[in-house]
Length: 170
Image 1: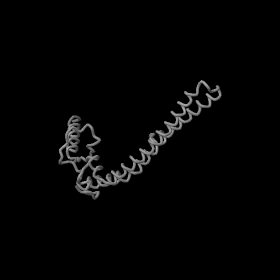
Image 2: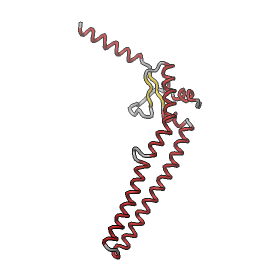
Image 3: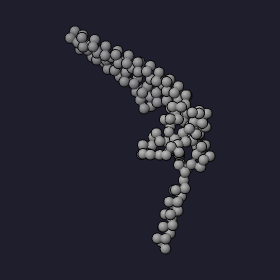
Image 4: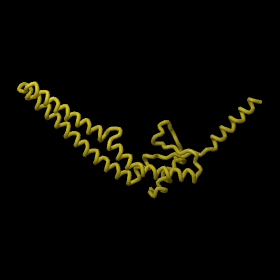
């Protein structure tokens, strides 16, 4: 009796799993078709380059002061040496602090990227949810980030439907 109940439960679970509908999207494909995403990336790249230049200038200034210190080392008193060494260290720390401020995990670039991309991601999520509910999909998988998908039928890829729902057609 116990084995019969277990067998019935197993069969119900298998049939329920088979009844679920799946779909795939390619988030990279969708994002490359959205002009706002490309504009946001261009703006972030420009800002990033500006900050890299600022950091490079600060680093070069630290190197200049260090080379100056090395050239004058023999003629400096102990107090002057200490002062120059502290100046070099301060400049190097400043450059490192700028790098962390702009490019660190909690840096300005990460914050701005999040602010620029969140509305786009929210719109995509709403479109995916709408298509999934309309078509009865229980699961939608992003093939761009699902590295364990070796093969998937193109018939279950709904990326173009998502783009259409977002107002971008191929």
